Amino acid sequence: MILPQPLLGELSGLLGILVLLTALYLQSQTFVDPAIRGVAAQSLLLAILFVVLFLRSGDADLLYLAAITAGIRGLLIPAVMLYQVRRFKHSLRESGPGQRVPSLVIVGIIVVIGGYALFKTALLPDLSNPSASVPFVLVLLSFLLIATRKNALTQMTGFLEEENAVLYAGALIAPTIPLLIEFAVVLDVLGVILVGVILSATRDVLRTLEEPELEQLTG
Image 1: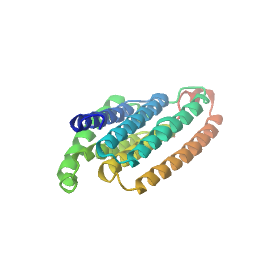
Image 2: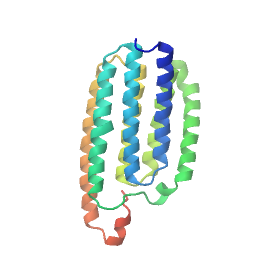
Image 3: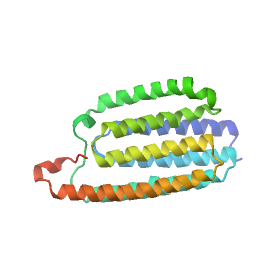
Image 4: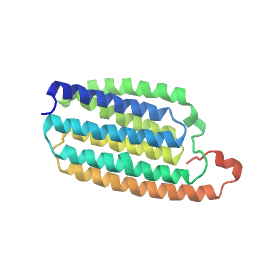
């Protein structure tokens, strides 16, 4: 081992906390660009976490999972989304409830606390890994992000966050299942397809809007 097991355990815990902080950061964003960059950073942190888990367990499947997460959800999909957003030539942001940043962040913190309490009482007795509370809370935050946003691209970041949470949970609970890798590939392919469809539809909508309406995009 390159690093001692206790240090690797602390490092994986720290990365898990950083992943949750990126989820709260996404809740605080009204503009699309920082939301896309935020979910990209979250995916890259998750990829690093998978590498740390590989160093702890020696399971090579976690390396494949790290490469898929970093390459597709951390780099490819965000790059495509950012490139297409720049082609709109105006700032894309939320409107309505999605602009209430302070209240959404507070709600997000409440979800984190409540989700951890729910995990500890309902799921922890059946799971041997208490670290699985992090992806469980991450799923709840992704649902909150999707439900409170109208912008289609911001909702897409919520779906990417949900994928990250599912793969995070799979890596902690059943990292040796080869199906997990195939599932990750399928999720990423679907993600690329969804990005293409959403961006194409959004461009069609923008062409029909008047100039004053181009200040913001709503889904």
